[in-house]
Amino acid sequence: MSADRETDNHMTHHDIALLLADAADEVEIGIAPTQAVLRGGRRRRARRWAVAAATAVVVAGSTGALALSGLPNGQERAVTPAAPQPSSTGTPNLYEPQTTMLATGTDGSTPWSVSIDVWTAPRDQLEAQAELDAMVQYDDMPGDVREAADLVGKGAYFVHRAVGEDSGRVLTTEGVVTKDSAMSGRDIQAGTSPLGPGHDGLERLVIGSVARTAQQVTCEWKDGTKSVVRRAAEENVINSDEFTIRRVEGLPFDWFVCLAPAGTEYKDVKVTG
Image 1 (cartoon, helix red, strand yellow):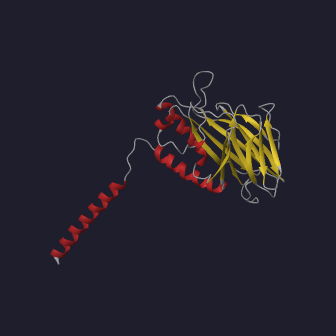
Image 2 (cartoon, one colour):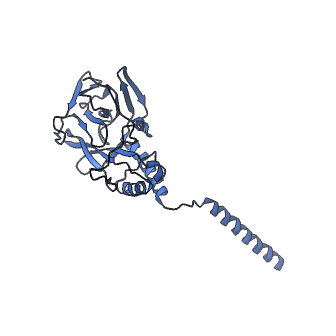
Image 3 (spheres, one colour):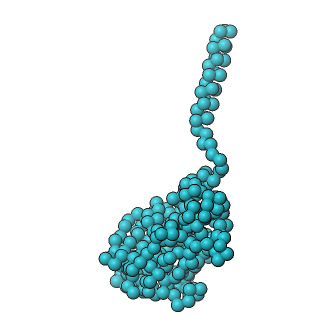
C-alpha cells in the first residue's frame, strides 16, 4: 500500500509538471496589451461586416467598370488614397478622428446617415501607438495594422452608416492610406449593401470614392431608373435626401452616396461628368 501511494504521488507531480509545461506553451508574452486589443477589434469588425451584408465592389476607370463580388472581409481596402495631412499647427491630432457627414436622409419614415472618420498619419512609432490607443475608444481599428510600427506614415479612414433614431453606427468599409496614392480621371470605387437590418434586403445603398476632378456620378438601378449625383455647391451644407459628391479633408479623393428607390437595387455606377 505504501509503495502504491508513493507511485500515485509521483505520477501526480509528474502530471502536474506536464500540465504546467503545456500551459506555459500557451502563454503569449508581449510588452503591451495593444496587440490583443487589435485582434479583438478585427473580430468585432468581421461581425460588423456580416451585419452590413455588403456584396459588391465596383472599380472603374476610363475604360469602363469592373464588378467584384465579396465586399466583406476587407475587399474595399483596395482603395489607396493619400494619407491625411497634419493639422495647421504642425502637430497631428492623434486622439480623435475628423468626422465628415457624407449623406443623410429618410427611407420611408426611417432616418439614416453615412459618415466617415479620418485619422491623421502618425510620424513615428510613439505617435502611432498613441493613435492606436485612441482608436480603441472609437472602435476604429484598421485591419491591416498588426502593431504600431505598421501605422507610421499612414492615415486611416472608416465609413459608417446609421439607420433609425437610436441605432449605433455600423462600419461599412475602412482602409489604411499612404501619401503616394491618388485617384484620377473617371476612376471610381464603390461598395453596395442593404440600407440596414429590417429593410428589404436589396442592395440599395451605394457608397464610393472618385477623383477630385469628377463632377458627376450616375447610379443606375435594376428597374431602369437612375440617380445623378453632382458635386456639392457648399461642402459644409448637408441637405437631407440630396445626394452629392463631397470633399473629405485629409484625403485627395472625394466621396459620394446614393440610395436606390424602394423595391429596386444597384445595377451600375460610373463617373459621367
